[in-house]
Image (cartoon, rainbow, N blue to C red; front, side):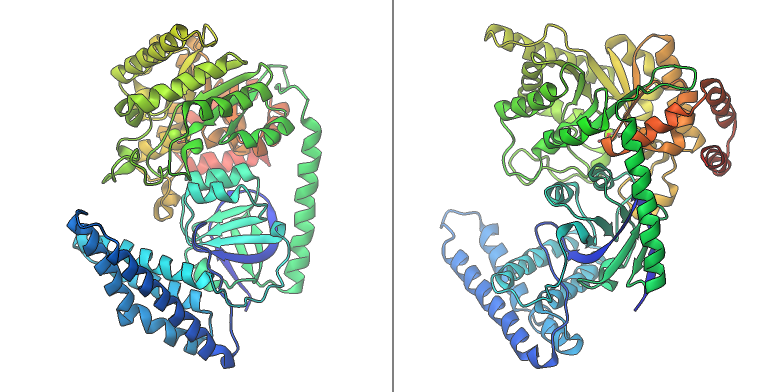
Amino acid sequence: MNFVLHGHSVSNGITIGHAHLVSSARLEVAHYNIPADDVPGEVARLDQAFEKVRAELTEVAQQIPTNAPAEFAAFVDLHTMILNDSALSVEPRQLIAETLCNAEWALVSQMERLVAQFEAIDDPYLRERKADIQQVVERVLKALLGHPGTAPQDLSAEGELIVVAHDLSPADMLLFKEHAFGGFVTDLGGVTSHTAILARSLGIPAIVGLHHARQMIREGDLLIVDGVQGVLIVDPDASVLAEYRLRQSAFDLERRKLKRLRSTPAKTLEGTPIELFANIELPRDMAQVLESGAQGIGLFRSEFLFMNRRQLPSEDEQFEAYREVVLAMEGKPVTIRTLDLGADKALQSTADAPAPMPNPALGLRAIRYCLAEPKMFLAQLRAILRASHYGNVRILVPMLAHIHEIDQTLALIRQARTTLQQAQVPHAPDVPVGGMIEIPAAALALPMFMRRLDFLSIGTNDLIQYTLAIDRTDDAVAHLYDPLHPAVLQLVANVILRAKRADVPVAVCGEMAGDPLLTRLLLGMGLTNFSMHPAQLLEIKDRVLKTSLPEATLLAARVLRSNDSQRTRELLRKLNA
Ligand code: PEP
Ligand code: MG
């Protein structure tokens, strides 16, 4: 059946390929139909998996040490109870028979139903028990995957597979970096969630906020991801497919043409030089950075080195990662942001992970967490300072809002430096320290930042989130997440203007810097340093090369006088057409 779903595009381009359904990177579940004759076999497979997990849980129960806390045994009992409940062990058997689907799919579908019922419960303790159901299901799935069924495996190579997921965490996306998927689509997610940012860094078309995509799409379905319009077409007919193949070639041709600009200096029509820097998550992004011709790294999101692992990376491991990037940049600036953990970028459950918070985006995130964990923070600072010996390193501190946070951070940097000096470990004598302006308080109290710091970088992703009180990861409010809101534009323009007046270097490293619709506006506000994903850099350079600065200045003044973001958007679209 042919149908179309609409969502929010988070990464441009068009891709055509086959659906690959995933539940999360760690828990991949295929959906396929089985012949009616195979129903008894499929049910038996499910029963065997339940038996296996029952035996596992019995073994765990027998091995609990006598001095273990009482909760331990209670948990094992609870999981056994869940496993034996007919809602989990009987219902999926019926689903297999009624819908002729595979056992994994039946189990996960039933789990999602049960989890939805738990989510509706008021009592927070009972609500949280949904996690136990998920854990039990995960165990059964693992047992099933040990005896996989036979999915119709006529799927093509990875490059033509499109990941279809209910939701993906940044940690999941990081794992996807190791594969060459053609695109991805999710039911949930906001446009500047870290998951969306990672998709952009992969340079593959992506759409979030599609609501029921994962339920409606089946493994192997033919899909068109139109990342230009935010449209997903499932099982297209021949004429639509032909039309999209044409559009895809035109888009790819434009991309190839842009590659010619790689070594062209970025300057406006009048010759004003503009610095175009790259954002990276991991050293392995460097190949893409070098291909883009970036003049520096404006944001190295170091927290990604800490994700998808049970133990924190040691000082030496961090040092190696930072040095790899510094050496690859051959003396060009490398801005290493100190850990921005928290909110949607969670540590896996280690002893070091912060306790669950009621409101993580407003909680112990980024610099707040680092200052609460000085031992971990000092190890990172020493690793960065050691890497500074090999090139041009700058330290960037996220989520600053208070004077004492800046002062404490600077004191810890001095302490890290002293330790290295005493141990005679080489490091650069002068490493500039900058602050991210991503909390409205920071944008409004700029002088205290400029007096203490060497440079500023505006993090528009969080600045928008905190100015408009819109969770950037929540697709339910994604339509209210508006970079062109007059309050956001006033804050951004003011920071640029005041920093320029005080002769403090200022950059934008949030997603606004990589949006070609906004390039002229930001240039008109006086911005001369943009940092973005390497995949976006050449398109932005193309815009810069075609921009007249006096015209852009007039445009910015006009936009800043307006209170209507819709009209601003139309105006920018017209100017960029
Ligand atoms: C930002 O907030 O704009 C930013 C660049 O940081 P992050 O997206 O990693 O929060
Ligand atoms: Mg941020």
